[in-house]
Image 1 (cartoon, rainbow, N blue to C red):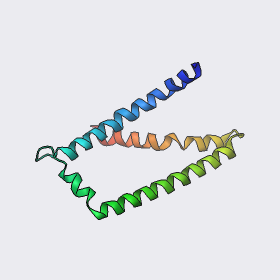
Image 2: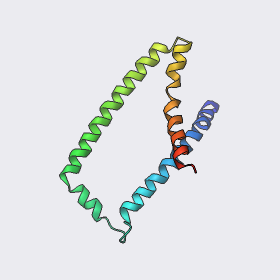
Image 3: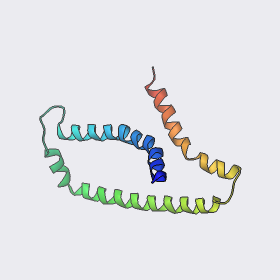
Length: 116
């Protein structure tokens, strides 16, 4: 049980970050879709969207691209992890460095863009 508690404690900062950053955005989008800026609360926009045939096509296409790209990325990541599992050195470090770099880039751009 002690190992499970430690694992949950290690996951807490990342989980809290996701909840705070993305949860607030999701709540804001849901509120704006239900209460437009110029009217009261209504589900009319959602009714129109769900009855639009183009929405069904777009939803199917999005689901297909999401599933295919996720499966491809998982297969490549698993193959690369199995290849590098027993190795150490610069190659493994370079492959591991790829993980935080996009996050750092986005954070830096956000600070520069939003900064004074």
